[in-house]
Length: 319
Ligand code: TXD
Image (tube, rainbow, N blue to C red; front, side):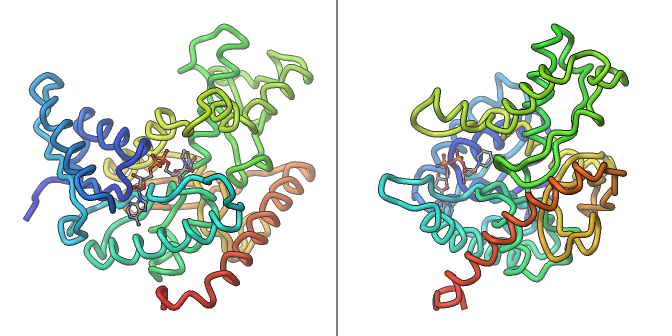
């Protein structure tokens, strides 16, 4: 039986293993790293354990393929999934990852019934919805990671453009994790100064577009695989806000029940994160254009949720 804070990470791939490193080396929590590939999570955990004397922490990192080892975790992060393979359609990917995420969420919550669940697997907003539905958890305990990453990318591009300290830049990106995300220049500042006072409209639009395609830009450069350092850092920030009960305001894919005029959907909105999970969804006073963009983004997510639900209707292994 563990007595210190522990976080379970399902999927010991690039994002999962980097997140494990961040959590342990920043001394935030013990980590259980779970994967389906026997030996991989165990090997990664041993490797991270062997760095402890140099990194100077005493956190336990366990690698496993058995959900029983994840019992009693405060936070469960799901990064498990498959990337798109040649010949595989986007629908195939949704169906495959949906099955993985649904099974993982159910199994993890069965062993950690009080945990907060953070979904990272793509397509993000759809997977968060399916994980929530599959576990029947209250809405405040399930969320998706995307807006923190998209905001970090916008923050980076603004700092690079203006030649200012990146920590001085605050940004807010709402909506779904994809081309229809909504970076909000009106809510983005350099130490309180709106970026609309520091750059012309064309420059801001260029940075907004780069943010919208930030993931694809990295995929194109790497050719195989996708971003994982900034995604792991972004997930770390959410776990930290929860475990340290910070009531931190972050853009998070959360379940909406009327906020922003949206119902029964997971999409990126500003939320206060603390020990209970999503403590509160903050409703910004969006302009008509910003709100229309959020609704267009939500329409795309809803179409994919409906597609996923139809595809899974005849999947006996999920019943
Ligand atoms: O902003 C965001 N939300 C994202 C999302 C940012 C970056 C990555 N994003 C998505 O996260 C990405 O599209 C993937 O769907 C996930 C994980 O990305 P990662 O780069 O870590 O993928 P890997 O390296 O392929 O790792 C996936 C691991 C791999 O080790 C598999 O063996 C494992 O998932 N896997 C499973 N683990 C447990 N249980 C099951 N069923 C399973 N199936 C595969």
